[in-house]
Amino acid sequence: MARQYHTFTTDRLAVRPTSHDDAAFLLRLMNSPTWIANIGDRKVHSLEDAKAYITERMQPQLERLGFSNNTLIRKSDGVKVGTCGLYDRAGIEGVDIGYALLPAYEKMGYAYESTVKLTAIAFEQFKLSKISAITLASNLPSQQLLKKLEFTFSKMIRIPNDPEELMLFELFKPQ
Image 1 (cartoon, rainbow, N blue to C red):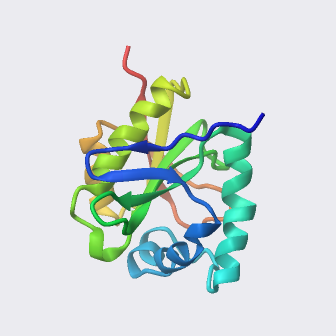
Image 2 (tube, one colour):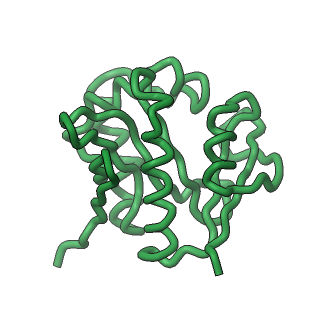
């Protein structure tokens, strides 16, 4: 029997696991100035690279854990605006939450809306006891969002294959 993957909605968004149908969108997102500045160059520079990234990096975790990267789709018009996901990332104890938006859709509340819902799902459906988040010290909008989501700064860390020192935030399941 095939595994059921979680698709969910918020007031304005449909949030579903990223698939090969999202390759062109992912290519655009991963090469946007905000992504490059805050996440880094993931060497996804063609449609084939984007499909390979989905196949090699996203789908194995989705199949193994039932969650991974999700594409954010605006319900009003079907436009793909960003991503939000839970990641089993090397160098981080537990699961990391991450999000990214195309520049045209930043500062519209989509990251907050999707991460509030995904955090609730992580605790309720996936039974996680803690969610981590990492960000660059220079990424003030991300830090503000994490604080709004009630994450607390824990410490500075380094993760494998990333030259930058990162701020680690944590959120524990409410008692």
